[in-house]
Image (cartoon, rainbow, N blue to C red; front, side, top):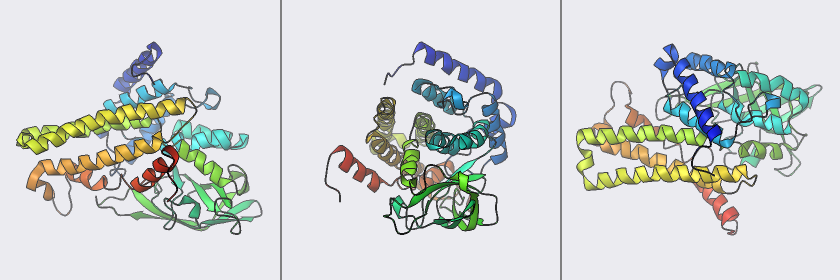
Length: 390
């Protein structure tokens, strides 16, 4: 993948930059970039209004086909959008699960009726989605899901539990991987359902994290219902659809994510300069290694995107996830170490954390969610290096 913008990319980048300069004002500017990982509870109403503003401007779902309301933006243009968005300090997005996961899944596997019903409100920012995959005994081993769905006339009835569900407290819909044939091999008896969240058979319980906030949730299904037509793909063919969704999960947004990382690293460096921590040779070396590591993250992300553009996604996505998660966790440790003994003290009672402490605590999860480091190493070993399965 080219490291420089084409002329068309530069024009699109300027369009995005100009739009953000004109529209990122008032309450949107006041909120800034808050609402990201570890702070998803912040500014929800403002962020939802911002999501709809983006939708009205045609700045959501950029990579979708024009036939489904997208702009068919090139990878370079999508990268430009995410980079400019992050550099502008715009609010953290709310619609990424709809736009980046279920939307492309419905485009690829859904019926005409499903596309007509679900894609427009995702594009406009009017409906939010969450993902019903992980369970207490089915995280990395996703095929081990036990949540079940049974056909009852024109509806599916769902019973079970999901966990680590981001945005579940606000989402309008959830896509659920569930077991519809208990007698089939575990990869074969699964189906992929689209389920409304606002109904009596669903209970959401927030999970309190180390940061004191609740980004993730448990979701309990006790006779929850969804129309029979809300199955994506065929009955018992949900594994194929679910793998399709996962293939969409790691894309161009990672370049924008890295702009946020750079902002965090800059804050750590400035703090080290102010308190003199950068005068310590070991600390100075760690700061330099973190700076170098961030540049390597960008080049590997570009390599991963190039493989997607060629239509032959390989293990690069797992390499990228393993790399950025480990780097970001180390940055959290560095941020607290730069503070010295002051990094051990809360900013206020009862549990008012500094930005550095919040970064340290939340990044402990980076190497677990979205595929743990151990799982990523297994994928790399088996699929890239050809090693025997463990």
